[in-house]
Length: 59
Image (cartoon, rainbow, N blue to C red):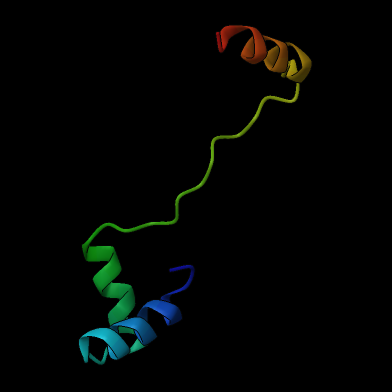
C-alpha cells in the first residue's frame, strides 16, 4: 500500500473493518510501520567501476 487511504479502503473491503484516517495513523504508529527509503548514494561513486566489478564477479 502506498498511502494510508489505500490501506483504509483495503481494510474496509477485505476485512469489513471501518477506520477513520486518524485511526489508521494511530494503528500504523503503534505497529511501528514507516515508509521504506533507500540509502543515499555518494556523489563521488564510481559507477563505471562498479558495473565492471559486477560483470567480472558473476562467474
